[in-house]
Length: 447
Image (cartoon, rainbow, N blue to C red; front, side, top):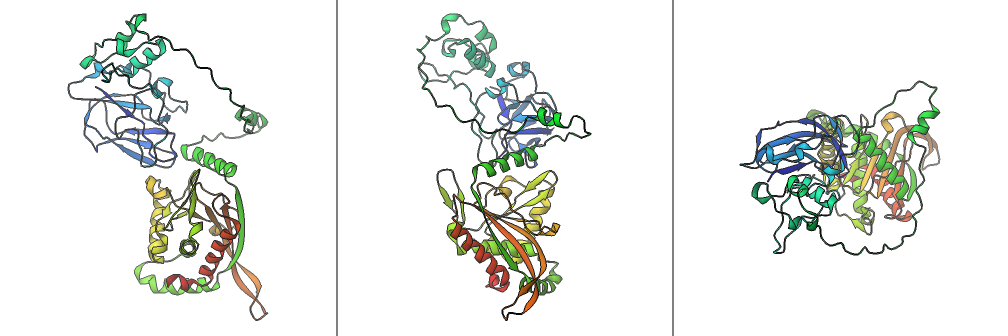
């Protein structure tokens, strides 16, 4: 019978997406691995592949349609011998293009996805509620179209008592509409609902209309939120509301690191390599997590996951938001390898070409605003990470040397934002101390 192709979850945070472009048209034959469409997620534009073979019988969602919920049918694939007459969902209206409204309820009540459809590279979202496939007295599944199941549910009809006139005995819309009332199952006595205590309402900010009214007499331009900005807003709100942050601050003397970096870059010039201060910071954090393994951890709801490798995420600003690509096994890689990998990830992040596995995971993150002249700031933890290091710019300051004489040094301010559920104060201070030692004695990181 026809197979519904569902809107896939192409990233772990994706709840809806934009069907940017169809790469097939109705009537095209496809096989597993063929590209079907380009889909804009909250992070990137990604290609969606077929996992079955067949003929594209009906495209249900037009190009450019925004706000298509994950697991919403977007097309129908026909098997050999089937034709467009078998597709009853074709009669249902298509979602409007460029509309952020939710998909029709009928779409969310479709059958469970065929293997591979509606699935992304990350964890699958909670399955859309749909009527369970009925079975007859012998335990055999009763086949019915999604529209027939929905109508039967609305009328309270038992599909096991209805004969199907569709292909291979499938129950179709006409069969359900012609069914007699006696096909309805006997009503079961309704269970008394258990009283639930009223939940405290979460504080809400002013509505969009209320805010707009404040500026009714001012000239402004309304900027539409794209998927990335919506996700950034949701995740940062979640982080500040649910993660108990605390902050640890230190100043790091950079003179030895800057001299060592200059020396290395001269030697690497013939290979076309140039190390940045950020490369040293990433390496210092990775080694610190190895020195304090209890801090190399993430919050997992009802438990803590303590990782063995140091997977360090780095915030990369892109137009309209940011990515946090992850440098995996950073403690094992040389400075030049980290530098090359970071440049590649940052370039592809700005082009929105990263795959989900390249920006998922990690236990610790680095956010560096030093190149913008910011001396210090507090970063928001990116869940489920246990901590994030906010890095400011290096500033020449007067300092008192070991001999008691006043001299000048290049000092860099850092702030470690810590999830208190995962890392306690003393443990966070220990991690930060190791980061400071690694950066003030950079040759140690090569040992």
